[in-house]
Length: 265
Image (tube, rainbow, N blue to C red; front, side, top):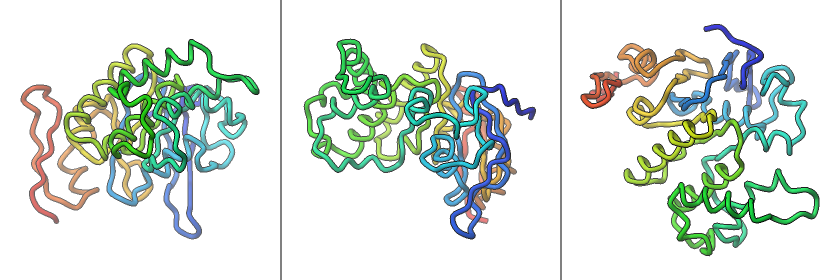
């Protein structure tokens, strides 16, 4: 696949190591078109590390990641926060803020020094909370709600940030099936309405297959396959990466691949 530095997001031979252990190895990736991009792969394959480099939660080396054709290391933090929002796996909050307080934090990149939120910011926060079905929690202490509710609050904060690129690390891991589907539908609707790029780490292969426009399959820190669900979710790829025998059939409603695990290899 051709890679273009003028893409909205361009990853150029990205390497990353923790000590002597190499996690990412020569990752090359171009994303320019609005859509839902999922990252799949077994534990330890580098999914979260890739997201953290793109978000600058980890500092990538110079000239390895470009956003809007500019080296990401050349952006100020506030500038990056207007371009990329990031929802990590760990959504624990140490302070007793309300859910509304947390969501309004997504507006902070747009505040001038000593400036407080305006009516427009309150409206954006309200819209984000309603779209994730947490408006009723607006006055609740963030540490007195369930883990799944807290996860939706953090996602609402990212929505309120109104960035062109949104990164989600296992966004449905603490949600029941109803809220999983509700959130995935919200994200797809957001992509259509705002024309944004969403990149999400997902463990559920069938969820990834049904909602993704493109899928990135990682194995041992390398991209093994990148393409449509039909291209990536194949018997050969899944058995090679996950070490299990699978049966893959077309979903009778969507014709997208549906994975049925059989036995470990």
